[in-house]
Image (cartoon, rainbow, N blue to C red; front, side, top):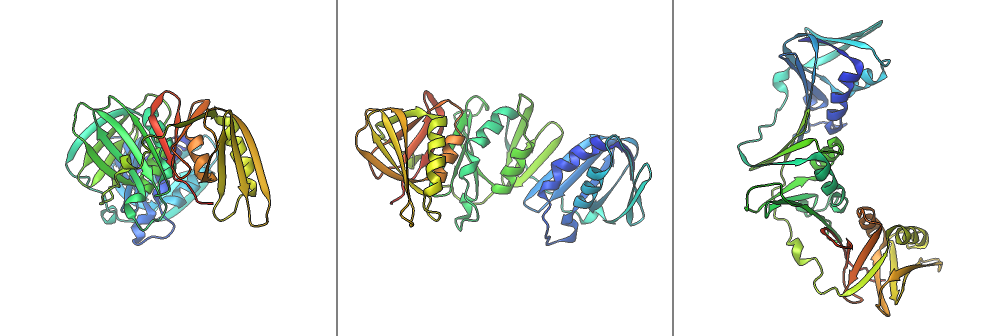
Length: 366
């Protein structure tokens, strides 16, 4: 195996795949990147047995072959070389040698046969969506995924095909985020898969803003996302996602419409004096006014008032301020609509006139 390439051209695929490599490995070869050169194309693949990333680039003066070498060491060396450098990489016995101008490196390698390449299985459903649209769906929902919850099926994102559209849903049991788009499939069939947190975050990192195509292929145990020059293959979580539609408040007729940035800033300031453990703030609503109140064990208090379009009178509900801020940050519009039912109900946060994105925050007893 041998090839020659410009530093910047090699750095891009390495940047795309190095993120999946863990510092501590169950198998030594999982610390390595699989390099396969064929037909003038070099493909780089990394894996942690749950998520597999691969990216490719055209190379020059290539000799076909494959090997594995430390992903982080190779990435760090290429990153540290001067801009515009020419890099020659070749397999030499059990070593991989890298040369660039007056720089010479010799790296240990492991046989490519030891690298566990993921077999995604037979594709059961395939859809295409532009990367910008899917990136927006993820931005509006992934923040609500659980982190190391014993309910393992919450530590990921529900990706659902329904009514020829695509929906993403995440919840950690205290809040829920839902985003959807229409017209991405010809099928009326409803299909749900749960993509683990790491696979979601790696895909989100690789997606670009714009109309470049993204192909999502669903098999029994894997989701494969094919971008223009890279592929993400993620195992699916084997579990049953909660009935999320039952969590969305019905009959929440107490409507408060406010300027999104004004209420976000008010919440951020009030949060300074909230209880550090529970992060609770009280939302009080009166006609024309939304009031944010925070207390802490030191008997300190913060109170912020924001103008609001509402006729609601004497309604008071407690919430985790971080959950409110996350939901507000995931809304694009300049104004936000908050729907409540009573003093013990969840808040439904959405953009006025836009039903494609909904965020639910459970109440907090203060």
